[in-house]
Length: 168
Image 1 (cartoon, rainbow, N blue to C red):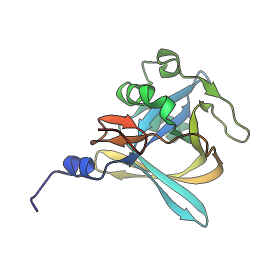
Image 2: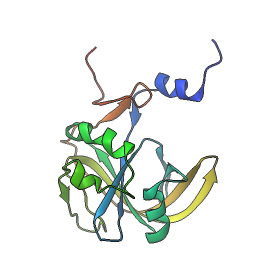
Image 3: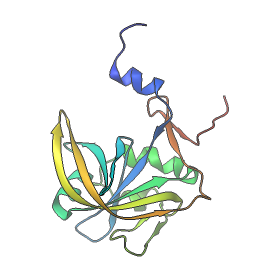
Image 4: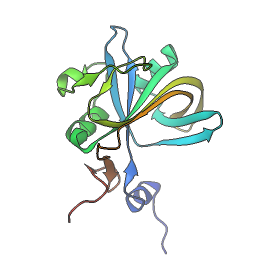
């Protein structure tokens, strides 16, 4: 074994799960940002966590509103996932720019992208500084799933978005 960077380690642990962090903009529209650092924390009570850069507009929206929906994208959303993670919602309406079809779901306070296989609707419990990121710890309000949608994952250190089995 040899010493490697944490970024290189992320390539070795591929595929990594993805989520689209859906928050409400001041104009009432949904902002969508891509993150792959999320996890289940507790099943009693139901809690999840995700990490975002301190400068993240979506993180700012979560801190202001206290509400977030984590939408796990299906493979049909693979093309927009990278775009949503490379632009800021502070200056761009990513839903409009990338032509993302959105849907309203019962008991979920913000719209989420159609083609998601799992949606976890949450309320912010607390956030913690972790280096150059904040870790958002959330109470889960509602979980909705669609087992017929194929999950998209990040491959190669987040350089490629594809299903769990990719052809080489």
